[in-house]
Length: 152
Image 1 (cartoon, one colour):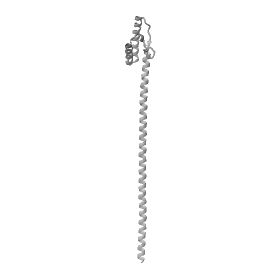
Image 2: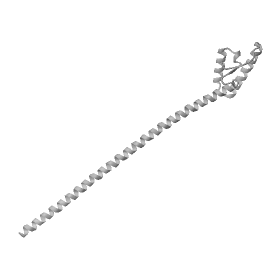
Image 3: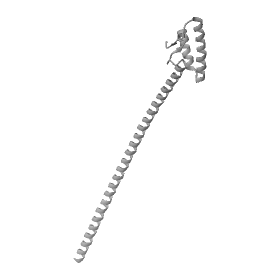
Image 4: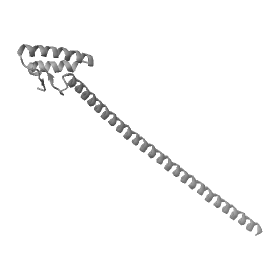
């Protein structure tokens, strides 16, 4: 009977230890699963953060491109206005008026504007307008008509 009691005690102790080990192992595995879930959640958060960052970068790039395009358009318009102002000044300071325009035909005025428009340098425009003034002064003398700056 002693043997049986001792044997029962050993079996009971073994079962207790085995149970305890199984419970501990289950907790470790459960903890491992929990740690795995947490790692997965962190990875998901990091990926979402990276996607948000990339989306913000794309939005900022788009905005920069729009600003650059707008600036280029404004710069081009400003340059065109400055060129027109220079042409107007070369024509006699009367905006888009033409010195001696009253002595010219519509076709001559259109040709004058086109020629002035295609000249690249200020010097070329000044030479062209000086020749034009001389021609208009000759016409004025020949016709006996005073010279006017016309805007057509």
